Image 1: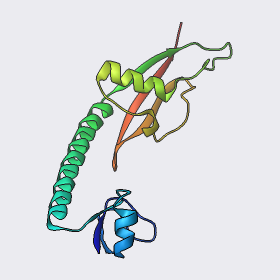
Image 2: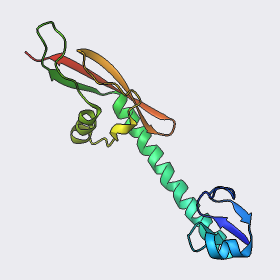
Image 3: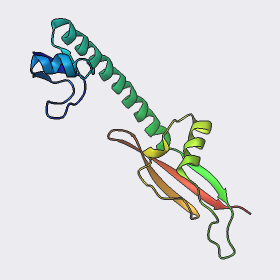
Image 4: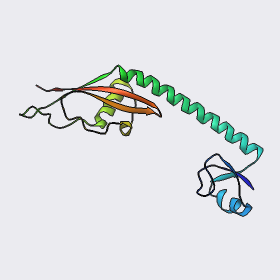
Length: 149
């Protein structure tokens, strides 16, 4: 029986591939667990339609990421922090705070896990942080931390 895989199946193939498998394996394992569909003209058309919808969705996400990249490149986030007696910064600024400020002030939604530079901002001055907005689209946000007087 020919089936179209809906998910990766170890030893069989990857999602979207058409494979020939034993009838019993398809009917008793793959199809009931929704790992595959029997290959018919209707299922091929439905999968092609779903693939087109997914491609459009991914294109829209990429366009949004490119717009956000332009916004981020022209942006400087300002923070004030207390200093120790020796002039070093007390505490740090986390990516969670950056994520929150970008959403509240600039309506740019970014997941804190998408920051490429995974270090804490714990020094005064300017710092450039890279953010992966989409596969291959990397934006840079500039953060300026000054001493609170």
